[in-house]
Amino acid sequence: MSEAANRRPLKSRSSGWARALAVALARTAITPNEISVASVVFACGGAAALIGSGAPWALLTCAACMQLRLVCNLLDGMVAVEGGKGSPVGGLYNEIPDRIADAALLVAAGYAVRVPWLGWCAALLAVATAYLRALGGALGLPQDFRGPMAKQQRMAVLTLACVLGAAEAPMWHSDYALRVGLGVIAAGALLTCLTRTRALARALGTRVRP
Image (tube, rainbow, N blue to C red; front, side):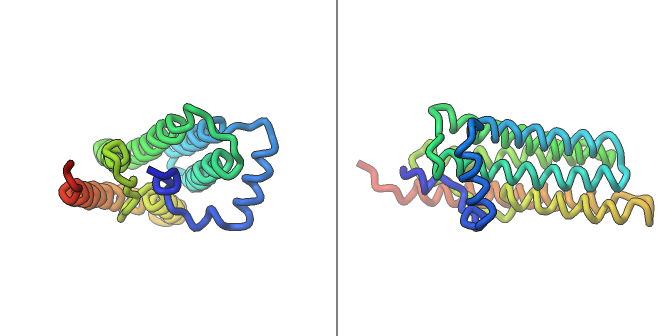
């Protein structure tokens, strides 16, 4: 399986700012694995802000941390592949920090709105979407990054929920935006699991047996 087939398709990878930043990082001693670890640091910082306070500043801090996490997710692969700084354990650093970051943010959101089961449900389903993608790769198929609630979509919904929540909290003293956002993520991730499972079964069923 080609490396290109197992990379998440991202339009932002071809943007000027991303290419310039990736080139600059590739010239330093910073490794792609360190960038991957930084994504977890940002995610945990956002999760801590979310749990620690429901104030608008905390919600906006979490939203900013999520975007910084995604920038790290973008740059680690670019520095590794385009920058030629990949390592034998790069695959582990590409996957494990993502799962930790997803779980930290989603579980924290559940506790922040006092519905912990919803946060855990969203986190488990998010991990399941990644498991099904990786399972396809392990079975010799191209990794399936389809949505409707892949990683970028999950973080986009949660970021929007935090921004809306920052406006909602001082006006109505409620947290409906974050609750609805978590529900959308959980439902969308479940649908993503179903669509990826169907696609995986279809691809395995059409394989030519020796």
